[in-house]
Length: 457
Image (cartoon, rainbow, N blue to C red; front, side):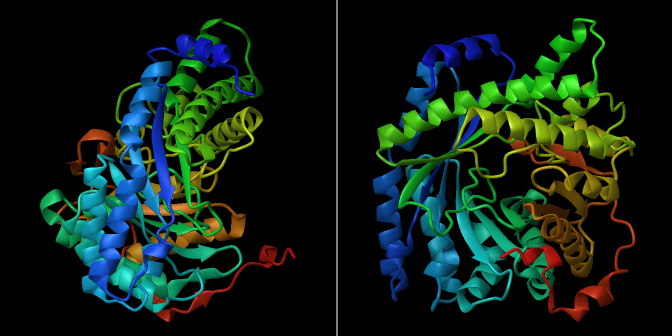
């Protein structure tokens, strides 16, 4: 049982340290909206979203004010659009996306995720419609986010899908060139996609979930960093084990806050409470950075030897503290390292300390993958596909979620700073070495078989 006095004392202690509920995501199953006529389909989708989500924003605001903790983003996630679009074409996909965008605007939510396809073992007709419509969908809508799962521990890695997506990403960048390719920031390519993730752009409602559920994303890099500073300032002789314990205790407190708010929002909306995702998701605000935590752990230059070990320790401590605090931990849950959204990481790229290859190594132990990585606009589609394939291999072999959110900026060269503004931040364009050297590998296509550890039954 969550004790309100414990939560309130935690809030008071962590005041002004960037503790917030980063996202309240209402997940909705829209499979009953399927229809042979696209106009009928879109009408049913809009009616269901508005009926279910019209009170989401006001409820989150009211609960946030009650406990003194802001809910930064209010979002929607739907069951995969590919299911709804089976038997339809690209025009229907664009119509559905516009309907989702309009319904989200009417409900005043920030984003709606779930324009998704699950193609780890093969591409169905509905999946193909979703993937090929993404340049139009992501350029003609403001709030719609997409995800594609191309690999899993049980299925292996679908290289045909990855190759196709490499070309689609370049088309999205071209379609949103006026916004410096920003449409690509609304697409995540996954291995082992979680079905209850509240964070965009990868949120969707997976199979086996309730008709409607509330999932919470709690974030507190600034809180963790402040806790470490206070502990180090005491002048004690500390080990990394001591610092890991401090992170674990802080993660416990943050998770308790998130679960209290999530359960109350779900109760007021009359839907099931799902999970708390306790990921440390940074923002460009100074003091709210995973990179700054790594510096507190003794990594003077992010990307230097030891950076991967520090991320691994941070990720593990966050998970342990959260799991002790709640029996409803899910989603991604760990430490994010989105380059443009984290001022310290972006600075490490600018200084030349953090390169793409070291960033990839760090993703092997963080909770997501290559996130908000800005690359030159002339990077070949096959090279983008090979970068995705490398990240998918990390996820499949290690039985963890990995993801790629990569943005080729039209006309941009390595070293140029690109600023997306707001929570999406800014970063120098990261150099992609050996571009074109993987073309033959990607062109083989087919499916990389699942690893031996997939045979667990």
